[in-house]
Length: 181
Image 1: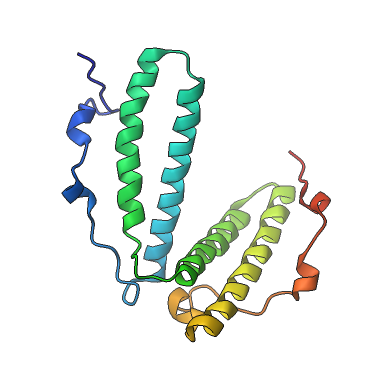
Image 2 (image 1 turned 45 degrees about the vertical axis):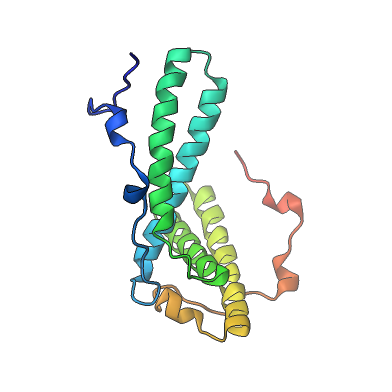
């Protein structure tokens, strides 16, 4: 009988959750710290990327034994991603969720830029932060127009919501997006 183990030697079958275990209590969007929301969004992105990698790996791996073990790991990790994703409340509007994602983009890209030793990459990340700020501002404006609420409540003043560049200056030629590999 095929019995795959995780990195600690625990059978993966014991890690498969039932629906009650997957049904987690989502965060309260009115009471949660904005960085808790950011951590959930970041972790969800990491989990989704892992699932995408494993999917591609399984499609290109000729070893059936490895593919069987990977099938178990993929199943368990998809459950883990689902739990993380379900921590975000379904009551949040699309714009509220988008503002959370933009806050993650601003803060995470700014952190990477601050710690990047290569001057070329640092400049690229800093430019990315400007783009993320532009997006945050535009979504904040839309949020205020559509839902009549301030985005500062969602980001709790931890990420600055400020006017961006005029839209006519934001658009660039696709060649401007080409970076040195």
